[in-house]
Amino acid sequence: MTEEPTPHATAGPEGTGRQHGALHHVEIWVPDLERAAASFGWLLEALGYTPFQSWSNGRSWRLGAAYLVFEQSPALTAGRHERCRPGLNHLAFHVQDHHAVEELARRASRHGWTLMFPDRHPHAGGERTYAAYLENADGFEVELVAITAPGPG
Image 1 (cartoon, rainbow, N blue to C red):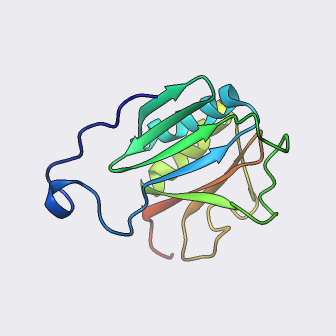
Image 2 (cartoon, rainbow, N blue to C red):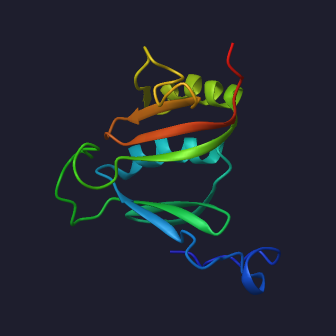
């Protein structure tokens, strides 16, 4: 594992870039690290995350003070994530606007993602939400939610 980078000096208490109660990291166990790194790595880097840590069983990407870890643990008990079981259902990310949502959704299939609910896209989450729901080969779902979206009409 690599050393943690120096915190941002402009944000958070005492210039640490960290805030009480803010998310520190999320660790997700995956059945195939290289497949996860290919699908999640592409997506996270497209969203502005940067590679952070790398070791034989894992990789992480950072945005701000928080980071996401993907690890192929020898203690893993299943070969595929099942989002409908107790535990993680999906990760949701803010995306600049509806144009960026569409561009990411279009490019995602080249990186191991499939558009979910295509018959209801981009409003599968309701008429007030402009989002793309994607699933990768290991059953992990992400939601890409436009920060700004076109108005009704």
